[in-house]
Image (tube, rainbow, N blue to C red; front, side, top):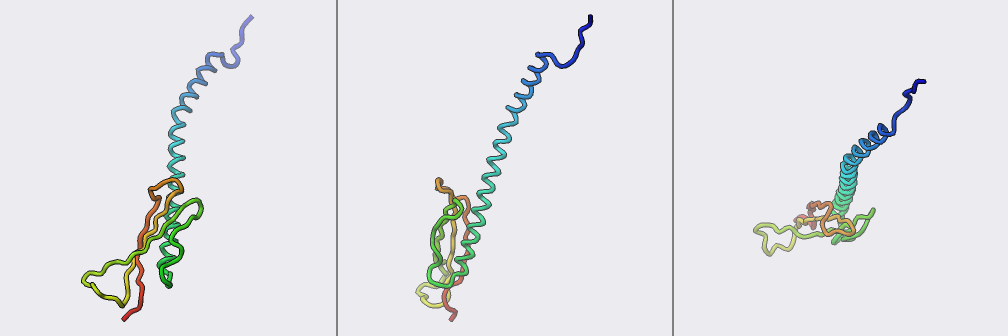
Length: 128
């Protein structure tokens, strides 16, 4: 009577499973890191788009000040600050156009470090 050699032995199956588990264990941290970086990149891209839209809204604003100085959209918090750019040699000048600096910072809810920051300038006031 001969013994036929069909299939795998138990030892071969255990060794194959051990090799597969080691390969999975080695590859899993790399996959996790890649997914975290992709999520961070998506958040920064969304923050940059939000900052750009707020810069454009403030630059186009013709009234005093501007639209709301801070708010939230899509889980991101934004803050706009507007300040006058000092002109060299223009002490005491009260009329004419002013150059204002617009800065937008976009944050996650829980962090103090901005995801994105953009700055721009706009010309305000009347031309002499």
